Length: 286
Ligand code: C2E
Ligand code: MG
Ligand code: MG
Ligand code: MG
Image 1 (tube, rainbow, N blue to C red):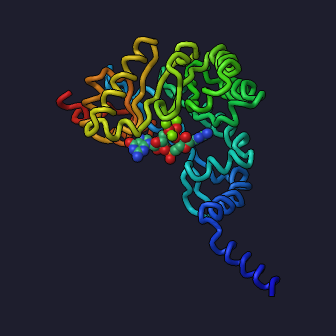
Image 2: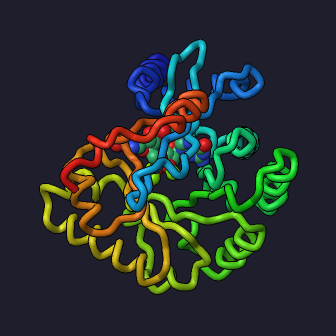
Image 3: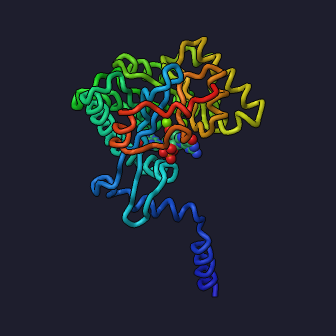
């Protein structure tokens, strides 16, 4: 009797096993061979400079189409890749693919066109990171000045002294550093001054409400002013409307990234977009 109860208890547990945990295990299984099966692709999201209304750079964003699961979003599979250690191999693939693509754009005559690559905190902690980046630059022939890496606030804000050393090593290679999702972590503002960073990316959550929540507008305006004082470039992430663009322009934001201009698209589509100026109507009444 006890045994059957135990079974029932177990079955009950198994059946109600958290949907998220099931999904996690499923993704983990499919992720294992995804790289060798060539299931990944990089897309690139344009970043528009408000000084000249041109696309001046792109952020590389990973896309995965699994034969079993269909399209899986990075927010679902990156944590699994981090947990299983696959992120290192995957991250190296991303870095190499992005560098070779940026070099192809340079060879096609797109000068000063930068590519930005997301780094997981797991990659950032690895001793082999610098060599990995260096190999990607050397093998592709991409000048380091055309590469930027994105790290989240939380990735760099603990163990600050050690991380400053690591960030300096990246900067010494000539690679630019950007702080991603800025405003969501718990950065001490005084650290910002000590970090050898080039760019702050204001998190989308502040941008969404910039025209409806005066507090968020004030925060964004303050971040932009702070960045300007510290000589950092500011990028607003997740800009979707003309109203948001107008407000950010009034705050003197440097660069805009978001669906208002473009979602992440294939490398070919980026090349195509770069042949024509952006539609002037996008910038009307600024
Ligand atoms: P992230 O680095 O902050 O990238 C920006 C995310 O915001 C992208 O989502 C992008 O598609 C989305 N986005 C951009 N503009 C808009 C907008 O106007 N509206 C909305 N609703 N969304 C917008 P995505 O591609 O799904 O990536 C999610 C996150 O996954 C990234 O956030 C990044 O943290 C991670 N990720 C993506 N690719 C990589 C990668 O190659 N390596 C690592 N380590 N992480 C990656
Ligand atoms: Mg990013
Ligand atoms: Mg971000
Ligand atoms: Mg994010």
